[in-house]
Structures are given as C-alpha cells and as structure tokens.
Length: 309
Ligand code: HMG
Ligand code: MG
Image: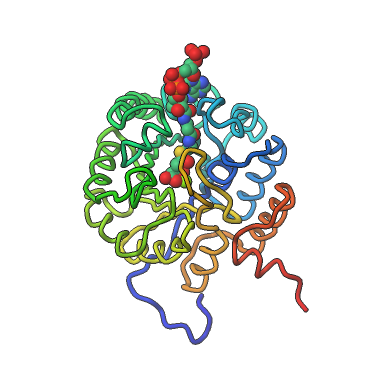
C-alpha cells in the first residue's frame, strides 16, 4: 500500500505485469562475452525476485548478435520454464523458430519495425519482406501451441528517418495482430518519446490496451513519464530491464531500457501490485554490475545500494 500521505491517483491499474528484458535486451549489446553461467544465474535471480515474465535470449543469427550465440546452451542450463512463468525468446525467422522449438521454448517474440530503415538495419529485409517472413513463423508457432509476442520498434522516432507517424505504427501493430501475435509491445528503441506521443500512438491503435505492452528505452530520461502515461491509458504490461541494462546493436543512440528498479519504486509508491521484490532485484543488479565491471545506470539501484551512514 502507498505511504500515509499519498493521494491515490485515479485511472491506474491495480496490477502491472513487468516483462523483464534484462537478459536479452540488456545483454545483447555487451561487447565482452558474458559467461553462460552468469547469464543463467541472472535469469534464476530474476525469477527468484518474483518476475513472472523473463525474456531469456534470442535465436537470431549468431554473426549478428555474438553475445547471444549461446542461446541453446543457456536454455539447456535453465531447463523448462516453471508452471505459469513466461520465458520467451526472440526469433527473427523460421530458422530461429526451429531452434527455439528444439530447445523446448513455449513463447517466442517476433520483432518488426515501424520504419523501413530499421527493418533493413536490424533484419536485412525491407519492411514488407520482414512481415512476409514473420507471417508463417507466427502461424507455425501458434500451431505448435506457443504463445507469440510481436514487437514494433521505432514507434516514436527513428535515427535515420526522423519522425514516425502513429499511422505507421498502427499499420504494423495490425499486421502482427492479424498474423496471430497475442501481445504487441510498442518499442521506443532510441528513447525519444514524450508522453503526448504515447497517447497519440495508443489512440491510433485498435488492439485492446490490455493486449499491448510498452517498451521504453531511457536515452532522454523520459521512460518513467511515458510509462505512467501509458498506464493511465489502459496499458498493464511494461517492459523493463533490471539495473537499466541495454541497448540495441542495430539502433544508433539506443541506451538502456527503463530500469526495472526505477519502475518498481514508482509502482510500489502508487500501490500498484507487481509481485516483484525490490530489495532482491537491487541485490541482483548490484551483483550483475560487478560481473559486467561497471555500475548500474539505475537511479534506484544506486540509491538503495549505498550503505546506510
Ligand atoms: P541474413 O544475414 O540476411 O541471413 O540475416 P539470411 O536469411 O540471408 O541467412 C544467411 C545464413 O544465416 C544462413 O546460413 C541461415 O541459415 C543463417 P547458411 O545457409 O549461409 O549456412 N541464419 C540463421 N542462423 C541461426 N539462427 C537464425 C538464422 N537466420 C539465418 N535465426 C537475420 C537475417 C534476420 C537472420 C539477421 O538480420 C538477424 O539475426 N537479425 C537479428 C538482429 C537482432 O537481434 N537485433 C536486436 C533485437 S531487436 C531489438 O533489440 C529491439 C527490441 O528490443 C524492441 C525495441 O527496443 O524497439 C525488441
Ligand atoms: Mg529494446
């Protein structure tokens, strides 16, 4: 419950699902290879902190993201997702889906772009070609009984094309939804969005708000404001990264995702339930920062990690 003296804000959900991307989005941009056992321990600690949705890795072409080339080994080390826990992986094509199926994965995510430029940079395909690749992947995944998430990147601005219209975003959201993706995540890949844009994009989309997620990178310090705005407009799933790790290797100027601890601090203060323990998560991010050899960019991790004086 919120502290005494807090006025309850209206129009907010009672529960928010935090979709943790630290192990995938957080690590994919790390230059130095993170040992397999560190990745596995990171995921185990995230689950132990109470996370119910942890994106684990990507079955992309290893030459494109060398850091995640150990996807098979990581999943074999972790074993199957516990009952009721989501442990999705990214797949860019049929080859990725086949690898994910062989590894026993129960949820996959395809990742489209709202812009032509980023489709070409990230997937080596035109935007429409990338959708043509995804369509049979989503159909096959659903036929196998898998859950499917669809990402749309560059929803609020693109480093090569500049402004992105809400109509561009809505077209790709609809395309992914029509293929059979059950949850669509709206990505601010380079972290440029401000709250009015969030409302404009949400208003342009016809998919029910409880089937959307928001995925804000924090380059310009706007991720938390944008998240609160999305929650006030009916979104209940938020992507974030423990310790604020992250960035996309194929997007110029993308920094870390919204830090899960910063999000939790706000949600806890608002009395919104997540089921995640902030203290355990901070301890995990402090441990992970030691593994990576540099401090976490999360404000909350740094505030809570300072010994009391
Ligand atoms: P390509 O180079 O065009 O590949 O890459 P291709 O289709 O021409 O195939 C060439 C060879 O690669 C073939 O092997 C394939 O089998 C192999 P060969 O016949 O020559 O021996 N190959 C694969 N091997 C293993 N796994 C695979 C795979 N696919 C092909 N899945 C491709 C096209 C899409 C594969 C490549 O561009 C790619 O892997 N891209 C992934 C980039 C990426 O991971 N980006 C970061 C994630 S997106 C993100 O971070 C944004 C997000 O967080 C949301 C947001 O912030 O907005 C989600
Ligand atoms: Mg991202």
